[in-house]
Length: 150
Image 1 (cartoon, rainbow, N blue to C red):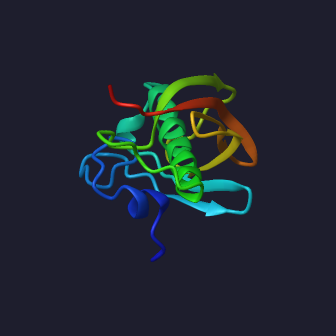
Image 2 (image 1 turned 90 degrees about the vertical axis):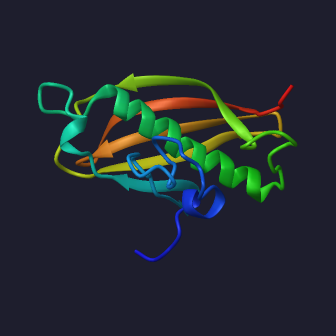
């Protein structure tokens, strides 16, 4: 796939473990705008084992946080809300309410879907899911706030 992801286009030098493409040991998520949602695919590594052969809950939480970041920063770009002076990003995670619904496979790719449900300059809310085999495996509501350095 030659298309640049949201992460590669908007913040290519970010070293975040989940979505930073400048982190050679990170997950390097790739998220794409598509209709009313931001979508992506994540292929777990063997090291992401939860100890009983499924995807680790912390990794699930990380990919939902970082996938929702792509949706928020894309929305910020669309609304011309760049980072404020002194801020590395326009928004930061303020909360992530996660529900683990079913086990996630460790050896097959999972689908990611994020929809920004509340958009304003001070804060945004995103519904994000991890799906596999046509079923939601984990879901979260991500709360993002404008990064205002003090």
